[in-house]
Length: 122
Image (cartoon, rainbow, N blue to C red; front, side, top):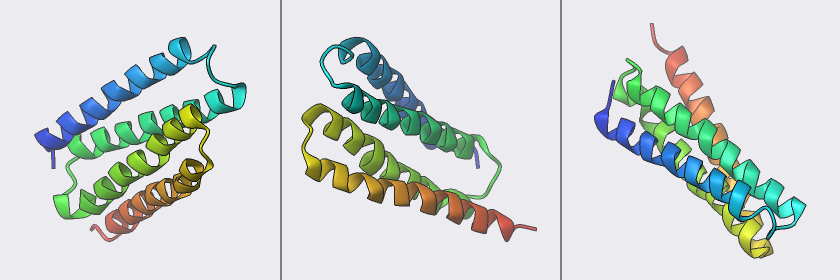
């Protein structure tokens, strides 16, 4: 498919992951508790993994109909999982932690839909 827009989006997502990872490592290490910093780092880790997954889909030769929903689920997961890990780590507000599993579910759906869609290919 090699989608320039998706390559741009994935590149922005990965650049943001570097910025947020550096911010967590250098700006938050003395401000957050060890548990909060671990939550923040988990968000960064999944941010990187799924940013790379988006980049891989962007440069793949798979047809758009195969990658459309995995891309949607990965982007939704990035917002709900990583985004709310960051917000929860920074605020400590329990409600934000309750949103994180929906992001994890989005990631899982993205991977399973990708597996199902590619399994059908000849």
